[in-house]
Image (cartoon, rainbow over all chains, first blue to last red):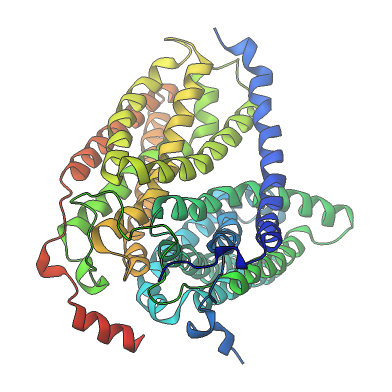
Length: 48
Length: 452
């Protein structure tokens, strides 16, 4: 039985559902990237 | 009252978009991945009760990871019968209850109660949550099992990125409000994660019997290692393939722990006077990003490369990188960028190893009992979680106790990990298709399915 109407689920619903998990991930990623940038902030003095 | 959790009531209606399923799995994994950020509670707990020491607090995480492996192994077969929604619901209950019990334990200054809460009860939630969406995702994405499981397990890597800053901000907020910061933070996180995981419980759907994606022929790239037969969990764990995959996961995880366990002190010791604690914290953050990204990247790539080739890359490139890493330190090549690049590639393969293993299991044993088999295989992770730190801390303690330079201990540790990866290489090379005598015959499969 092949998938007959994959578009029956509303694309808006799919977007909202993804947003629910992407939003906290993006928040956490922002914090982590900000933390990671501290490595590069001190890297010029440390690298050859 | 809990009928809505039944497998039959979670079957997707016709036309249900399969892309609604990965967020359900991600909701669970992003929540339970918080366990990797538990270290943010270490110093606050130390300051909270001066009779507690770092070692005693460290047991909270170890117990949680041990119970992750135990519960995944014990409840895997039950999960196949109960369905993903019920398993995810119980995972949410246990994981959340773990926080509340730990909050009570903190208020009562009782470390055993915290062990019981966050460690045992929460750990059971971790195990149930980790394996619950795997077989469902594989059924929804039979054409791309690596991508599907990679997406979910990427969430576990990303969970720490949310859990870490969330805990720090909540503790700061409650402290400024004059409330007991740790118990209130535990309770808030327990409630928030329960709601987030319930989103996954309500969103998850299993495909209808016989469903397959539109335009998919029903078979993937032909390979002797992609079986069209199923193997029951009761037989799978007796096969040499299960043992080999256990060794593969164990070696890959133990080697990764060799970096993760000492990431911050290692970079500071390697580049003394150049990298301070703040920059080292940035390095740890970078590792967590690549740990997460590697889960999605390598698992997705494995759909094209094949699982055996993917692990071949891990176990070929890995030993070279582990061998090279000590050469980058201050008294050799003295290159921070090279050190960082090597470490992040290693960590991407560490994450990739976790995320690719469910698809490897599916290839070898079929999708029928893959969650249960995966659950039993996760005991390799629990074992690595004990052995890895034992190797790393044991060698470091030996050097310190004998007044030797701690920096000199790292090459030995990394070379041991290099050797472990060679063992993994041999195990991966030895993987062959599962013998016919282990296959589930169709009559038995139908009977078991009816019993489900």
